[in-house]
Length: 323
Image (cartoon, rainbow, N blue to C red; front, top):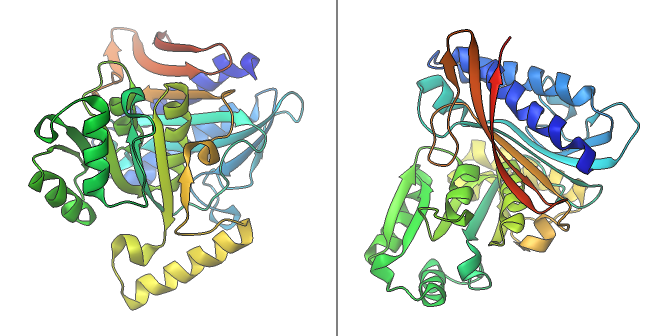
Protein backbone atom coordinates (compact mmCIF):
# COMPACT_ATOMS: atom_id res chain seq x y z
CA UNK A 1 0.00 0.00 0.00
CA UNK A 2 2.98 2.31 0.45
CA UNK A 3 3.04 2.80 -3.32
CA UNK A 4 -0.36 4.53 -3.12
CA UNK A 5 0.77 7.35 -0.80
CA UNK A 6 1.25 10.02 -3.47
CA UNK A 7 -2.08 9.20 -5.13
CA UNK A 8 -3.86 9.33 -1.77
CA UNK A 9 -2.51 12.84 -1.17
CA UNK A 10 -3.58 13.82 -4.68
CA UNK A 11 -7.08 12.57 -3.90
CA UNK A 12 -7.66 14.99 -1.02
CA UNK A 13 -5.89 17.78 -2.89
CA UNK A 14 -8.18 17.40 -5.91
CA UNK A 15 -11.31 17.34 -3.74
CA UNK A 16 -10.18 20.47 -1.90
CA UNK A 17 -9.32 22.28 -5.13
CA UNK A 18 -12.71 21.38 -6.61
CA UNK A 19 -14.56 22.76 -3.58
CA UNK A 20 -12.49 25.91 -3.09
CA UNK A 21 -14.04 28.01 -5.93
CA UNK A 22 -17.42 27.57 -4.20
CA UNK A 23 -16.16 29.02 -0.90
CA UNK A 24 -18.90 31.19 0.59
CA UNK A 25 -21.55 30.19 -1.99
CA UNK A 26 -24.03 29.02 0.67
CA UNK A 27 -24.83 25.71 -1.09
CA UNK A 28 -23.24 22.84 0.83
CA UNK A 29 -24.79 20.18 -1.44
CA UNK A 30 -23.15 21.68 -4.52
CA UNK A 31 -19.84 21.79 -2.67
CA UNK A 32 -20.13 18.15 -1.67
CA UNK A 33 -21.05 17.17 -5.22
CA UNK A 34 -17.97 18.65 -6.86
CA UNK A 35 -15.69 17.18 -4.18
CA UNK A 36 -17.21 13.72 -4.61
CA UNK A 37 -16.74 13.90 -8.39
CA UNK A 38 -13.10 14.94 -8.01
CA UNK A 39 -12.37 12.19 -5.49
CA UNK A 40 -14.09 9.51 -7.55
CA UNK A 41 -12.13 10.46 -10.67
CA UNK A 42 -8.82 10.29 -8.81
CA UNK A 43 -9.65 7.05 -6.97
CA UNK A 44 -10.88 5.32 -10.12
CA UNK A 45 -7.50 5.70 -11.79
CA UNK A 46 -5.44 4.29 -8.92
CA UNK A 47 -3.65 0.93 -9.17
CA UNK A 48 -5.59 -0.81 -6.42
CA UNK A 49 -8.54 -2.99 -5.55
CA UNK A 50 -10.33 -0.40 -3.43
CA UNK A 51 -13.65 -0.51 -1.63
CA UNK A 52 -15.48 2.18 0.34
CA UNK A 53 -16.31 0.62 3.71
CA UNK A 54 -17.62 3.74 5.41
CA UNK A 55 -18.62 6.92 3.66
CA UNK A 56 -21.50 9.21 2.86
CA UNK A 57 -24.27 6.81 1.97
CA UNK A 58 -25.25 3.55 0.36
CA UNK A 59 -25.63 2.42 -3.21
CA UNK A 60 -29.11 3.91 -3.71
CA UNK A 61 -27.74 7.33 -2.76
CA UNK A 62 -25.25 7.80 -5.63
CA UNK A 63 -23.54 10.12 -6.72
CA UNK A 64 -22.11 9.88 -3.21
CA UNK A 65 -19.05 7.75 -2.60
CA UNK A 66 -21.26 4.99 -1.28
CA UNK A 67 -20.57 2.12 1.08
CA UNK A 68 -19.57 -0.93 -0.93
CA UNK A 69 -18.44 1.04 -3.99
CA UNK A 70 -15.40 -0.51 -5.67
CA UNK A 71 -12.78 1.82 -7.07
CA UNK A 72 -9.42 1.52 -8.78
CA UNK A 73 -7.99 -0.44 -11.67
CA UNK A 74 -8.77 -3.84 -10.14
CA UNK A 75 -5.05 -4.59 -9.88
CA UNK A 76 -2.72 -3.85 -7.00
CA UNK A 77 -3.25 -3.93 -3.22
CA UNK A 78 -6.69 -4.70 -1.78
CA UNK A 79 -7.60 -1.74 0.43
CA UNK A 80 -10.48 -0.48 2.55
CA UNK A 81 -11.30 3.21 2.25
CA UNK A 82 -12.98 5.53 4.76
CA UNK A 83 -13.96 8.79 3.14
CA UNK A 84 -15.47 12.17 3.88
CA UNK A 85 -14.95 14.23 0.72
CA UNK A 86 -15.52 17.44 2.68
CA UNK A 87 -15.46 17.55 6.44
CA UNK A 88 -17.36 20.77 6.99
CA UNK A 89 -19.41 21.44 3.86
CA UNK A 90 -21.26 24.08 5.88
CA UNK A 91 -17.94 25.68 6.78
CA UNK A 92 -17.00 25.92 3.10
CA UNK A 93 -20.45 27.24 2.24
CA UNK A 94 -20.16 29.93 4.94
CA UNK A 95 -16.44 30.64 4.59
CA UNK A 96 -15.61 29.32 8.07
CA UNK A 97 -12.38 27.78 9.41
CA UNK A 98 -11.20 24.15 9.55
CA UNK A 99 -12.86 22.69 6.44
CA UNK A 100 -10.92 19.68 5.17
CA UNK A 101 -10.99 17.05 2.44
CA UNK A 102 -10.14 13.79 4.21
CA UNK A 103 -9.60 10.11 3.45
CA UNK A 104 -7.97 7.07 5.05
CA UNK A 105 -6.73 3.82 3.47
CA UNK A 106 -6.12 0.56 5.31
CA UNK A 107 -5.54 -3.09 4.38
CA UNK A 108 -8.64 -5.08 3.47
CA UNK A 109 -10.85 -5.82 6.51
CA UNK A 110 -8.85 -3.55 8.83
CA UNK A 111 -11.42 -0.71 9.05
CA UNK A 112 -14.74 -0.79 10.89
CA UNK A 113 -17.60 -1.39 8.46
CA UNK A 114 -20.60 0.71 9.53
CA UNK A 115 -23.42 2.80 8.07
CA UNK A 116 -23.27 6.58 7.81
CA UNK A 117 -24.91 7.44 11.14
CA UNK A 118 -24.12 9.16 14.42
CA UNK A 119 -21.26 8.06 16.63
CA UNK A 120 -20.27 9.06 20.16
CA UNK A 121 -16.49 9.58 20.28
CA UNK A 122 -13.83 10.28 22.86
CA UNK A 123 -10.20 10.93 21.90
CA UNK A 124 -7.07 11.64 23.93
CA UNK A 125 -3.44 12.09 23.00
CA UNK A 126 -0.54 9.76 23.87
CA UNK A 127 -0.16 11.16 27.39
CA UNK A 128 -3.61 9.92 28.44
CA UNK A 129 -3.65 6.64 26.52
CA UNK A 130 -5.63 4.05 28.48
CA UNK A 131 -7.36 6.66 30.67
CA UNK A 132 -10.74 6.77 28.88
CA UNK A 133 -13.74 4.46 29.11
CA UNK A 134 -17.03 5.39 27.42
CA UNK A 135 -18.88 3.07 29.80
CA UNK A 136 -18.14 5.58 32.56
CA UNK A 137 -19.70 9.03 33.07
CA UNK A 138 -18.04 12.03 31.44
CA UNK A 139 -16.98 13.40 34.83
CA UNK A 140 -15.03 10.25 35.68
CA UNK A 141 -13.33 10.25 32.28
CA UNK A 142 -12.30 13.87 32.73
CA UNK A 143 -10.87 13.13 36.17
CA UNK A 144 -8.95 10.12 34.84
CA UNK A 145 -7.51 12.09 31.92
CA UNK A 146 -6.50 14.94 34.23
CA UNK A 147 -4.78 12.47 36.54
CA UNK A 148 -2.95 10.79 33.65
CA UNK A 149 -1.70 14.17 32.43
CA UNK A 150 -0.82 15.41 35.90
CA UNK A 151 -3.14 18.39 35.61
CA UNK A 152 -5.85 19.83 37.85
CA UNK A 153 -9.28 19.81 36.23
CA UNK A 154 -9.28 23.58 35.77
CA UNK A 155 -6.28 23.25 33.45
CA UNK A 156 -7.84 20.49 31.34
CA UNK A 157 -8.92 21.54 27.84
CA UNK A 158 -11.76 19.72 26.09
CA UNK A 159 -12.77 20.24 22.48
CA UNK A 160 -16.32 19.53 21.37
CA UNK A 161 -18.82 20.76 18.78
CA UNK A 162 -20.96 23.88 19.03
CA UNK A 163 -24.22 21.97 18.50
CA UNK A 164 -27.39 21.89 20.62
CA UNK A 165 -26.89 18.16 21.23
CA UNK A 166 -23.61 19.00 23.00
CA UNK A 167 -25.07 21.52 25.44
CA UNK A 168 -25.28 19.07 28.35
CA UNK A 169 -21.73 17.88 27.63
CA UNK A 170 -20.45 21.45 27.81
CA UNK A 171 -22.36 22.17 31.01
CA UNK A 172 -21.07 19.04 32.76
CA UNK A 173 -17.46 19.76 31.85
CA UNK A 174 -17.59 23.44 32.72
CA UNK A 175 -19.17 22.64 36.10
CA UNK A 176 -15.91 20.82 36.91
CA UNK A 177 -13.82 23.78 35.81
CA UNK A 178 -12.73 22.17 32.54
CA UNK A 179 -12.00 24.65 29.73
CA UNK A 180 -14.24 24.10 26.68
CA UNK A 181 -13.33 24.82 23.07
CA UNK A 182 -16.48 24.46 20.93
CA UNK A 183 -15.98 24.46 17.15
CA UNK A 184 -18.80 24.62 14.55
CA UNK A 185 -17.99 21.27 12.88
CA UNK A 186 -15.04 19.00 12.37
CA UNK A 187 -14.43 15.82 14.35
CA UNK A 188 -11.32 15.00 12.32
CA UNK A 189 -9.75 18.40 12.90
CA UNK A 190 -10.66 18.14 16.59
CA UNK A 191 -9.01 14.71 16.84
CA UNK A 192 -5.83 16.08 15.28
CA UNK A 193 -5.85 19.02 17.70
CA UNK A 194 -5.97 16.47 20.53
CA UNK A 195 -3.26 14.09 19.32
CA UNK A 196 -0.67 16.07 17.39
CA UNK A 197 2.34 17.37 19.36
CA UNK A 198 1.57 20.88 20.54
CA UNK A 199 -2.17 20.38 20.04
CA UNK A 200 -4.54 22.71 21.85
CA UNK A 201 -6.81 20.09 23.44
CA UNK A 202 -6.33 17.33 26.02
CA UNK A 203 -9.53 15.45 25.20
CA UNK A 204 -12.18 15.46 22.49
CA UNK A 205 -15.76 14.40 23.15
CA UNK A 206 -18.38 14.67 20.41
CA UNK A 207 -21.52 13.17 18.93
CA UNK A 208 -20.73 13.28 15.22
CA UNK A 209 -20.65 11.20 12.07
CA UNK A 210 -19.38 7.63 11.95
CA UNK A 211 -17.26 8.15 8.80
CA UNK A 212 -15.41 11.01 10.48
CA UNK A 213 -14.98 8.78 13.53
CA UNK A 214 -13.32 5.97 11.60
CA UNK A 215 -11.10 8.39 9.67
CA UNK A 216 -10.14 10.05 12.96
CA UNK A 217 -9.34 6.65 14.47
CA UNK A 218 -6.74 6.06 11.75
CA UNK A 219 -4.96 9.30 12.60
CA UNK A 220 -5.29 8.73 16.35
CA UNK A 221 -3.75 5.26 16.14
CA UNK A 222 -0.80 6.41 14.06
CA UNK A 223 -0.18 9.39 16.38
CA UNK A 224 -0.14 7.16 19.47
CA UNK A 225 -3.36 8.46 20.99
CA UNK A 226 -6.41 6.61 22.21
CA UNK A 227 -10.05 6.57 21.17
CA UNK A 228 -13.32 4.87 21.99
CA UNK A 229 -16.59 5.17 20.10
CA UNK A 230 -20.19 4.01 20.14
CA UNK A 231 -22.71 3.99 17.30
CA UNK A 232 -25.93 5.71 18.35
CA UNK A 233 -29.21 5.98 16.50
CA UNK A 234 -30.91 9.16 15.30
CA UNK A 235 -33.21 9.41 18.32
CA UNK A 236 -30.29 9.12 20.72
CA UNK A 237 -28.41 11.85 18.86
CA UNK A 238 -31.19 14.28 17.98
CA UNK A 239 -34.13 13.50 20.26
CA UNK A 240 -37.12 11.14 20.19
CA UNK A 241 -39.82 12.14 17.67
CA UNK A 242 -41.99 10.02 15.34
CA UNK A 243 -39.90 11.11 12.35
CA UNK A 244 -36.64 10.37 14.14
CA UNK A 245 -37.90 6.92 15.16
CA UNK A 246 -38.36 5.98 11.51
CA UNK A 247 -34.76 6.97 10.77
CA UNK A 248 -33.51 5.18 13.89
CA UNK A 249 -35.28 1.95 12.90
CA UNK A 250 -33.69 2.11 9.46
CA UNK A 251 -30.25 2.67 10.99
CA UNK A 252 -30.69 -0.34 13.25
CA UNK A 253 -31.75 -2.46 10.26
CA UNK A 254 -28.66 -1.41 8.31
CA UNK A 255 -26.39 -2.15 11.27
CA UNK A 256 -27.94 -5.59 11.61
CA UNK A 257 -27.34 -6.27 7.92
CA UNK A 258 -23.69 -5.25 8.33
CA UNK A 259 -23.22 -7.36 11.46
CA UNK A 260 -22.50 -4.49 13.85
CA UNK A 261 -24.34 -3.56 17.03
CA UNK A 262 -25.52 -0.11 18.06
CA UNK A 263 -24.67 0.99 21.63
CA UNK A 264 -21.59 -1.22 21.86
CA UNK A 265 -18.32 0.38 22.94
CA UNK A 266 -15.78 0.21 20.13
CA UNK A 267 -12.12 0.48 21.21
CA UNK A 268 -9.46 1.86 18.91
CA UNK A 269 -8.27 -1.56 17.73
CA UNK A 270 -11.81 -2.35 16.52
CA UNK A 271 -12.20 0.97 14.71
CA UNK A 272 -8.89 0.36 12.94
CA UNK A 273 -7.10 -2.97 13.33
CA UNK A 274 -3.80 -2.20 11.61
CA UNK A 275 -0.90 0.23 11.72
CA UNK A 276 -0.53 -0.09 7.93
CA UNK A 277 -2.73 2.96 7.38
CA UNK A 278 -2.38 6.10 5.28
CA UNK A 279 -4.34 9.19 6.34
CA UNK A 280 -4.56 12.35 4.25
CA UNK A 281 -6.27 15.68 4.96
CA UNK A 282 -6.03 18.76 2.74
CA UNK A 283 -7.14 22.13 4.03
CA UNK A 284 -9.77 24.10 2.14
CA UNK A 285 -10.27 27.00 4.53
CA UNK A 286 -7.76 28.30 7.05
CA UNK A 287 -7.48 25.91 9.99
CA UNK A 288 -5.97 25.38 13.41
CA UNK A 289 -3.88 22.42 12.20
CA UNK A 290 -3.84 22.58 8.40
CA UNK A 291 -3.70 25.72 6.30
CA UNK A 292 -6.29 26.51 3.66
CA UNK A 293 -5.95 27.01 -0.08
CA UNK A 294 -4.23 30.24 -1.10
CA UNK A 295 -4.40 31.93 -4.47
CA UNK A 296 -1.22 33.39 -5.88
CA UNK A 297 -0.56 34.94 -9.26
CA UNK A 298 -0.74 32.04 -11.68
CA UNK A 299 -1.21 29.19 -9.21
CA UNK A 300 -2.95 27.85 -6.11
CA UNK A 301 -1.20 26.44 -3.06
CA UNK A 302 -2.46 23.65 -0.80
CA UNK A 303 -1.35 22.24 2.54
CA UNK A 304 -1.87 18.54 3.26
CA UNK A 305 -1.22 16.49 6.37
CA UNK A 306 -0.27 12.92 5.49
CA UNK A 307 0.26 10.39 8.27
CA UNK A 308 1.78 7.23 6.81
CA UNK A 309 1.79 4.11 8.93
CA UNK A 310 3.68 2.15 6.27
CA UNK A 311 6.87 4.13 6.98
CA UNK A 312 6.08 5.79 10.32
CA UNK A 313 6.07 9.35 9.01
CA UNK A 314 3.90 12.42 9.54
CA UNK A 315 4.35 15.03 6.83
CA UNK A 316 3.05 18.52 6.10
CA UNK A 317 3.03 18.80 2.33
CA UNK A 318 2.93 22.22 0.66
CA UNK A 319 2.05 21.96 -3.02
CA UNK A 320 1.87 24.55 -5.80
CA UNK A 321 -0.79 23.77 -8.41
CA UNK A 322 0.18 25.52 -11.63
CA UNK A 323 -2.84 24.63 -13.76
